[in-house]
Amino acid sequence: MICTWANSKRLGIQIMDRQSVESAMIASVGFDTANQTMEIEFQSGSVYRYAKVPEPIYFGLISAESKGSFFHREIKNRFSFSQLR
Figure 1: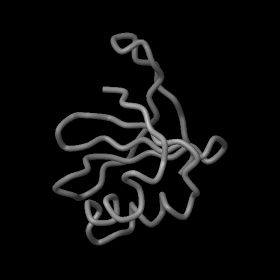
Figure 2 (figure 1 turned 90 degrees about the horizontal axis):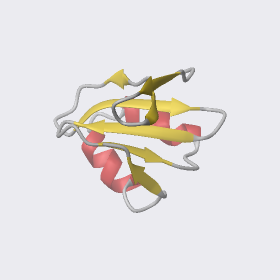
Figure 3 (figure 1 turned 30 degrees about the horizontal axis):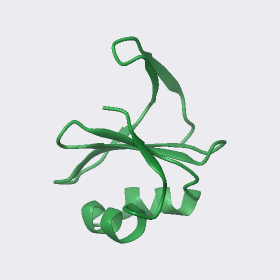
């Protein structure tokens, strides 16, 4: 996925375009190949940006049958992150 950035004046940050996914836990996911940065929007409305994520992890997440399980197994507590919202 080619990443484009959208300004969010309300948040004072740039947010990544994300694609919706079917998941009880995750609403959408975006990936910036150049910076190896992934954004995940959770069903709760929270958005997190993860740094130094290898591209295969992104593809693994969006293609996983259980995105929540994949997130807990492969992403959570493995990559530095910041909460955007």
